[in-house]
Length: 363
View 1 (cartoon, rainbow, N blue to C red):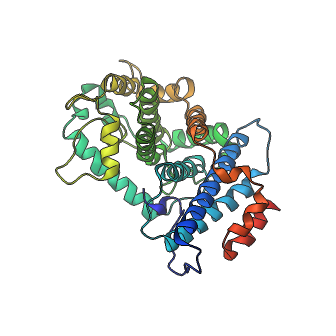
View 2 (cartoon, rainbow, N blue to C red):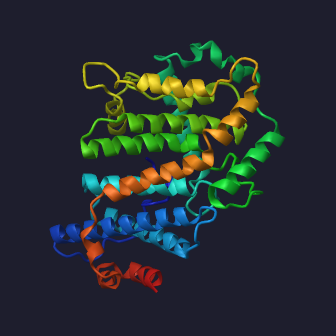
C-alpha cells in the first residue's frame, strides 16, 4: 500500500540519522519504540471510533489520536533514515498495515489531515479497475442477465443521493448531516478501502498461518456488497462496473506479468490448497451476496437498494462490524514490551526532535 494513502512514514530526506549507538542495539531500540507507538496509536484510534458513535459517552481521545499519528509518522521517517535497508518483522509490518487501514477506514467520513490526497485515491482507483478487468476476463460477472437493471435504471436522482448521505452520516458517526465531503469524489468510499481490507486480511493470514474461515468469507462478501450499495446510494454510480470491481476477488493468476508479493498473498487467501482449486464455498458465498443486490421481478431497483440498506445491509451498522473486526485483530497482537513501562520513562529514548511532541501527548 502506498504511504501517501495515510501520510504515515512519508520519506523525508531532511531528517539526518544522527549519532547512533551500536547498530544492533539501536535497531532493537528503534523497533521497540516503533512497535509501542503503533500499538498506542491503534488503541487510541479504536477508542475514538467507539466514542464517536451516537449515544456513546464522549471522550477527549481525539487530540491524542492526532498526536500519536504524528509521532508514528515522525518515527517511521527517522527509522528509515537510520535503517534504510531493514525489513520489519512480520508482527511489526502487520501492525503498521493494520494502523494504515484503520486510519483510512475510521476517518473516511471526514475531511481531515489524515485523508489521502486525491492523487493517491486516483492511483488506487485505477489499480482497482485494472485488477477487475483482469479478474473478469476469467470470471464473466457481466454474463448474468439479472444485472441488466443496473444498466438501465441508474443513477439515482440527486434528491435520493442527498437523503441517503444525510441518514448514513447521522447514524454512522454523529457527523454533520449536511456535510458536503462524504459522497464527493475526494472522499474515501468503502470501494476505495476494499482492496486494503483484502490485503490486510491476506497479511494476517500469512502471519497466523491459517486458512480462511467461512465467517471471514461472509465478512468479505458483505464488504463487497456494502461497497457496491454505497456507490449506488451515496456516490451516484451507474452501470455494472461497480459490481465488477467490488466482487472481483477469488483465486486466479491474473495477467502474465510477474506477480507482486501482496498479489501472491491475496491469491493464497482464496486458494483451496489443492492444485488450482479455489477455497471451498467462496464462489457460492460471493454469488449469494451479489444476488442480494438484484430486486425481485416487479420491484423498482432504487426502492430495493434503499430497503436493503435500511433493513438488512446498513452501511452504518457495517461500519461498526468492521471496527469490531479491527478490535479483534488488534487484541490478537502481542503487547509491545515498552507498554509495561511508564509512558514518561520513554521520552529519553526518543530523538530530541520528537521529545516535545511526546510531552504534549502526555501532558
